Amino acid sequence: MLEIVQMFAERGYQLTPEALEILSKKDTVSIDHLISSLDASTVVVSAEHILSLLNGRRGRAAEENAKPVSQTVNEPPATTCTPEQRSSGVEVEVLREITGRSTCIGDYTDFVKYFRDRYVKIRDLLSKRMSSRPIESLGAQTTGREVSVIGMVMAIRNTSRARVVELEDPTGMVTVLFARDSPAYEDSMLLVTDEVVGITGTSDGRGRIFAKSIVWPDLQAQPQPLTAASGGALFLSDLHVGSNKFLMDTWNRFVSWISGEDPTGLSSDVGCIVIAGDIVDGIGVYPGQEDELEIKDIYEQYQLAADLISQIPSWVKIVISPGNHDIVRQAEPQPALPKEIQSLFPGNVMFVGNPSWITISSRPVLIYHGRSIDDFVLKIPGLSYREPELAMVEMLRRRHLCPIYGNRVSVAPEAEDHYVIDKPPAILHCGHVHVVGITRYKGVTLINSGTWQGQTEFQKKMNIQPTPGIVPHVDLSTMKVRKLRFT
Image (cartoon, rainbow, N blue to C red; front, top):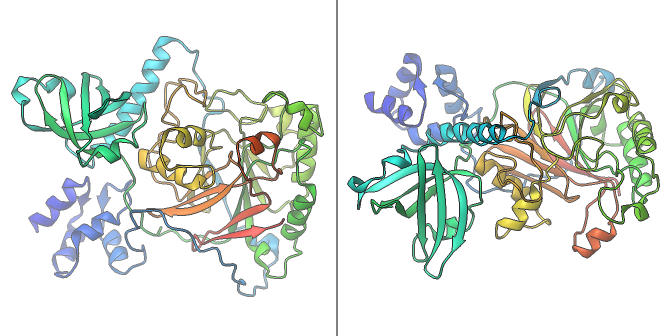
């Protein structure tokens, strides 16, 4: 029994006596399998947790690699409920976002607080996966010994023999070498600056570590949630109202469907729509944009957007967060749209910042417009705009939405790093790249929701093929995702 307690403790969990009693009577149970299936946010493991895992209600450990979600549309069971009755059961709550909480003025102390907050939060996550020591302790006495440290990647360079990474923690800096014949060399190609990772290797006692492995803060496999939920949610982004490429006919087909012109009856389940930024095309966002604008006044763009949103039935709750084309500051995190813009929209619309955490019928949803996907695609081999969901997997692996500082994304150094994924969401929802991508990673549903804008001249030059008019639908009771096509 002591061995069981120790196995849980080593992974950061505390067993209650009742849970221990159940496990001690199960000779054939794989303790490692049970632990890997626990929610990473759980601290005390109760008898209820164990019974749920043993009975299979919380699922099995998720696969190590992302796998596609089933996208087959099945006809829902017949119901006598009206759409208003069905959707009224979908509750939406805002957990946290930046609006009204920004304290950044951009001085030196802001940057120190920002990166220190990131380091501490992710170090605490990594500490559940590995034991480490301060970098300053790597003196001569560690020569030839295996050591583990946690630090922030400050610089990366390549030499003819190795990949060299400078790693820093609050106590000092160390040079980490990934020799080309090292088993960790391939993993080192995935490292990006400003992320926090764990490194294990051999110390030379003179400020260098010859790396053997990298530990990312990553998610543990997420079990199926215990809480009951019902209804459906739709995930949209990148409407780009005001662009001459906005697909009005496609939008009208969507509105007809959500209003009940749906032979399958699936639309009657929808109680919430989440829109992850770029509601309008904006003004002066990129050179030559005015040549592709149908509406050249930003307020007229929002007025039309509000009119289009008002076509959605009033019983559907709508959540809108901004993107880089919207009328908010360009530096992220971004607050919700201004009050004068909000006043144009109907009363069933809720406005949040970017990023933001909400719950939909108790399911935690992390919304981020997704501009950092540009940096992920640029810096990590194998990623592309054709599969944006794979960049989102890298966000979860790093437990951070936007780890790279100072590249494509302008980030304000707030006292708190709002991009750290300190707990696993049920759904991570992004947009920005105009390509639909859906997958599951360790029990989390990842959705990039495409666009309502046709291919722009810029996208033609970049060979980006948008996938407009495709709406991901999530069944909140099963977390099954369907693609609904309105093109």
